[in-house]
Length: 117
Length: 113
Image (cartoon, rainbow over all chains, first blue to last red; front, side, top):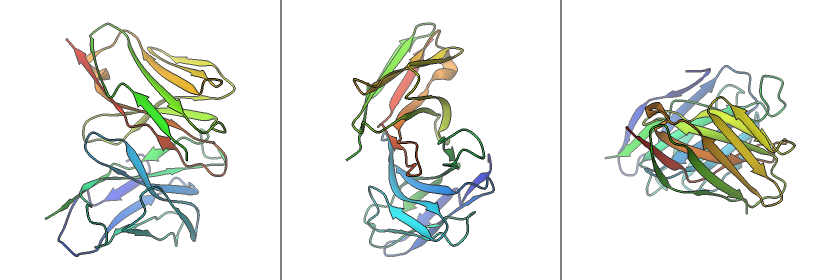
């Protein structure tokens, strides 16, 4: 999966339940991102982290939470406060310094499709 | 705030013809402009990018142009083939330590046989 792995591929959530989406990368990238993609729409930024133990809200952070305890991992929790969580979730990473490859380009994971049942 | 607008939202062209997708951005500090291709159910893949010190870049049948004064950039695909059918996203970034990328809303390109 090009060095960035998302799991599970499909996830079903019941009403009022919190679920956590996994994102792991072995690219030694500093920065990691979570995007949400709804059918026929673009990618909207949920959270991003440029360094371990630090993260920033994106454009649609409400109802989501993240942690960045390790450089390799950036899990996303979809909480019960997120009223419309059904979507395709994409994790990405990049190396802002350019040491690991092309400057600024993202590498995406293969995504997790979350459905509320 | 930062915004990237992309047009058209859907585009259908005859196989062998050219396709052009246009984007505008609002943040004048943006200096990195990647284009991604997303096939159905798959992850976006970087296909070409351009930086603000370059006006045009070409890679085989794909080219990107940038007009920094007007704050717009375009993707050109020549001699289109069926495998070009996908959703294409433009994006813009300041390309610094604050390296988040803002995406356009996407263009669904269909190639008619």
